[in-house]
Length: 205
Image (tube, rainbow, N blue to C red; front, top):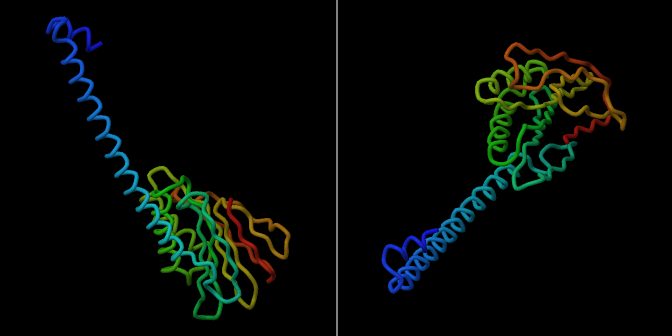
């Protein structure tokens, strides 16, 4: 559209040089835009790689004796998480979950959830989910988190589930109340269930 207007304004004799200059300017701006996008893409890639390394530190492959884990996010960073925290009484708190969404935002929520779990690992599963929910309701901004918490001890296992995939005991899926996901309602509560000891398998989607 610009070239006919330029030709009418400057005359046919001057249209060629003006059009050439205009095309050159467009090419220059395009190249600068491509270079800028490349720099931005490189910066984002570096941030994602840093976030991935941080997640690997938060969820190492082998962290606690007697616990085996595999954590492979679908993208550079993911919204799935797990923690196994030894307790002072010799027991173990195990938490698995999944943050809605993907990418850096989900990874940031995971970091916050892991921090809360480690700080309140002594709580019973239902109380731990309630504490996580309290924090997430304040900051979730419309997102939610599914989560399954377990306290493993000599006397058995206590579990509470907040809408997460059901765990398995000795290869059989357990029947647990699903409960409301975290971050949805500040008034939600989670029922605890006692089960006999066994080989427990916690999963995410």
